Length: 287
Image (tube, rainbow, N blue to C red; front, side, top):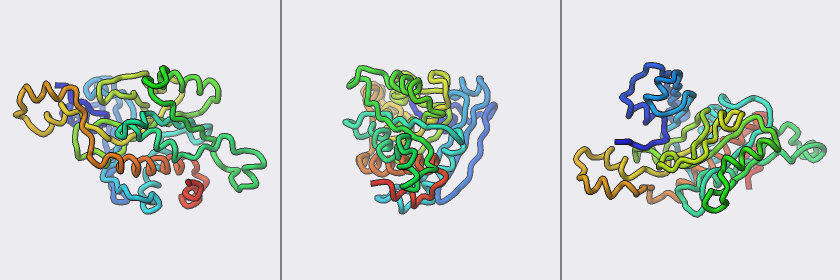
């Protein structure tokens, strides 16, 4: 049975935990567990079902009403993002998802917290004391069902127009375990394939398709029902498994998780991009 998950650490577990061709290290910092998994060979990539690259999983996230209350945790996440992105050049931040579906709204809501700075330059930047801002553009392109345009097509057009050094794509993820829902963030340098966790693959946003580095960031917000039943019970009835094939499960408090998680991710991206400014300075620029 195909257990659907966007989390590389879960895919590694499903494959049997074989570490051949895999690099793995863990640490605890600021009350969070950080796991860094590197898929180094093609055979390991086939075994796990994920592309070669680096996957950072940060678990047991404290989601609060005010991201200023978890500044040290956000700065830790920012450090992990910063380690994967080019040190210089414009950044293009893309919020993937549908704001009409709460569990799929993480990307657009996170993007709304990212500070767009590409237009702040010259005398305006100097007079505001913001001359050291790294140029960043932010867009939530909507979904294919509403626009008729693949997100990847929109991003490719923007890349040709503004020539960013990196794309940072934010999207809701799928997990195989309820323990990760709203409590884990994954950061990777392999990009994002929108909808892959629920079997709805779209144009992948990767360095191969776009020609520049693509960092994928997300929080699991849904579990495929068939995967959940398989994860929780070895004795599920065939009729239950069949009924679960078209169902997706999300937490009851998903609206709160999306609101808090999106603020955390958005602010972490600000801190990762604008290394010349303190958390407090950047937080003061958020409405």
